[in-house]
Image (cartoon, rainbow over all chains, first blue to last red):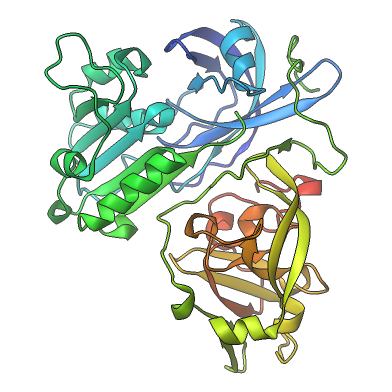
Length: 244
Length: 197
């Protein structure tokens, strides 16, 4: 998968849909013509109403590699137009039009020659492309060290909770901002520059860093990373905050 | 034949003839950036047009303002499917900036702080179609929206309106820029839905 993968339109069928969190759904799509995708890339979902009206939104892909099973985790934007349909109305067996895979910048590939440590930093549903990277790393016997720092409101808001706790090649640290798990010694708190510094690979390790989350989260974290001495050219960011 | 998603469409956004296909109207102004947000002060910013004769046309912030800032009201369309209508901008027309530029080349590479580049045919930048913008919605452009100055080419998808612009280089051919190498369309006309290649 080191050669470019061309994006095009595909028709997928919903193989399964189940709640990911209280506000999010995990969709597994069978897309027979899917060419595979790098970990971290995204796709467009296009919905068409019976009268021809269409709306399209971009979602990160949680799966990667040479597979025609494409996994999405979609968080509902309450006033949105597409995400509420995907979360509440889409059913197993339904067809769905997708366009992709898209994006070759915010991706990690096992073919990556750079073996420096990889630091993943997620805010909320921004964990989806980063989970894809950590899951891809899991298939490699020998590769870069991985860490994931994941900021989320409550334990119930964690995406891919089981899969994250099963990761063997990524050190996962989850920080709860509103409510910690029962019995946790750590009170809920937002990330600070100091807590980020304590958690992530130091600048001296020259990590590649991927940050994904809402715009203010990404801006804040990226600013701290630079203040902590990380090379700005090693930091890649992806933000969301759009129309749902 | 398009797939029909039965039950979809009940919450559709406002329909408006000014919306290109596949676009949704938004009231806020989402941010989409690949890397970090560069912090550039106006007093250290310069704008350059470089041609094949090695002639360099350069303006610092004050000289740039003196070229003549005008008001622009326009719609903008992002490739990630949102559009914003009737946005008020202020900036300097590229017609004015190109007044004394002699070139036989038909294309440009736009270079920005942070290393981002994009490509355009020169004809998409002239005849009242493009500006170097310094204000939006009555305020100086913030760094996250490309301040102190960004290209504004509203008839193309908004990634062409490169943030933190610093230089336009004349080119003999249409060389793909950053997003164009990463799968976005070489030209990006929203009315033709030229999103990806």
